[in-house]
Length: 319
Image (tube, rainbow, N blue to C red; front, side):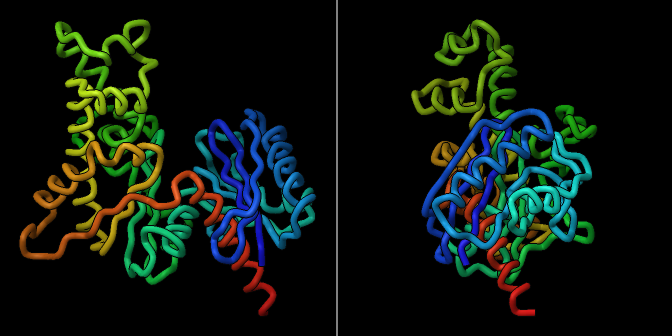
């Protein structure tokens, strides 16, 4: 049964009609508004645009936030207006279709397991490096959600004691060192530590260093900028340390690196593998997890959300 997957990001709402093979048949998108009602209007708009052209059985929403165990409520989403909201019922009533809600990284992990980098794996950890870090764990094809539906929150593991403060209230969190935001923060710190170094990156940061983006840092590193390359080396170091910590807990056979930062994986992933191999407990005496980049890119959240919605419909029909 075909379904629509909707990826609700901080800047855009993207929707796709997805078939049973994970192929995207049609898409629609709009900007992400700030208000609760206007956000729901935007979702209804893109779904209606697609249902005018396609017959579908349901809708899956991929959201960066804490989702209830029954996948109906958004308990908390840091970049969106919903707070403890039964969004499945509210949107389902407006759309006339069943709606399922899922964490965006869980959705992407399902898509990668069915159709991408994690196909055939038994235990796979998905780490999405974006503005922050999202994570998912797939065991024997099933998502591990924890007791309350929010596991695994790997982005807020304390990686660096007394490290950078995090908006979550802790310090030294994984995502403060390995996200796109972290990459730009590291570059700004390095520029301040080496004021006499004339680099392309310094020219980017000349007006306001706080506006420097991770993409700009990665682009400068590709062009040979020494400060940018050092920033990527720091990301590689802490990513390797973080993967080692995760591997000690879950012992995965595969780690999939996704999110926007993964587009620059050739600049840091080999080095991260080396750090991971050295940092894992029992290094040299136990297997290392394979580390691969996600194959579905930005479409993974939509594809996975649609697949999960379609499967939920199939389960309900079989009862």
